[in-house]
Length: 133
Image 1: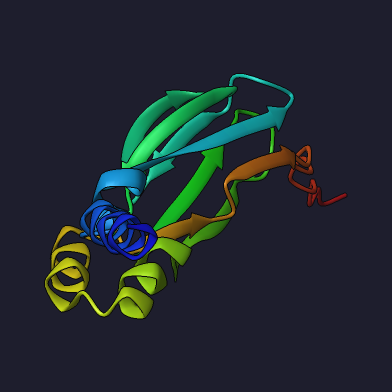
Image 2: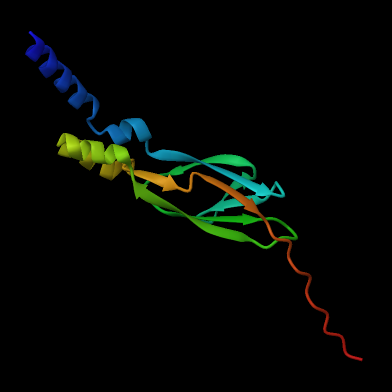
């Protein structure tokens, strides 16, 4: 009887782990962006996403270029990069190849890093005057 319960439990767990990154991670991820001072324009891959502070939701399947712009301050640029998720490896350990393939095609096999971006924007230097006497 105990052996049957263990077998049923293992079967149920293996069904829950089918393409678990797609189910648990989804295909997008929230990234929190803050700046000091606030109200900097957020650009992800050249597209405007509003102003800081904000939580943006972007696609997990690729790396992203992030840029913050605020008048009177130097622009800030960084990369949000993808890294393979723990849930993808759970499929591998489970031996469930179809789940891994689903996670690969949906992009949900990745986590985006960093998840939180907090930037102190640098005031821009005024242009030097080149006056002739």
